[in-house]
Length: 64
Image 1 (cartoon, one colour):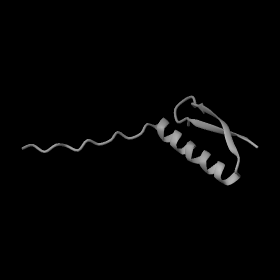
Image 2 (cartoon, one colour):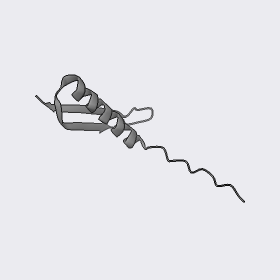
Image 3 (cartoon, helix red, strand yellow):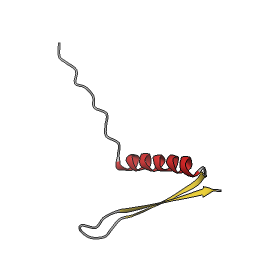
Image 4 (spheres, one colour):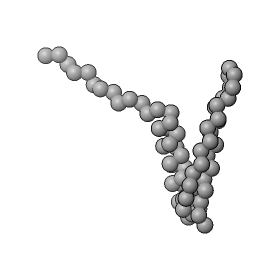
């Protein structure tokens, strides 16, 4: 009887990884400051040319 190959779960995409990290930061921010996050603004900039780096800016807007 042939053996079944284990199906590997696909690795999360970079977007999914970033969302996970941002979620963890928001949870930590709320725990440390006691403030409730009302909005998150994310700006992703792609550099031009060879060797340019992408940047991501995350702004946390919280209620007092």
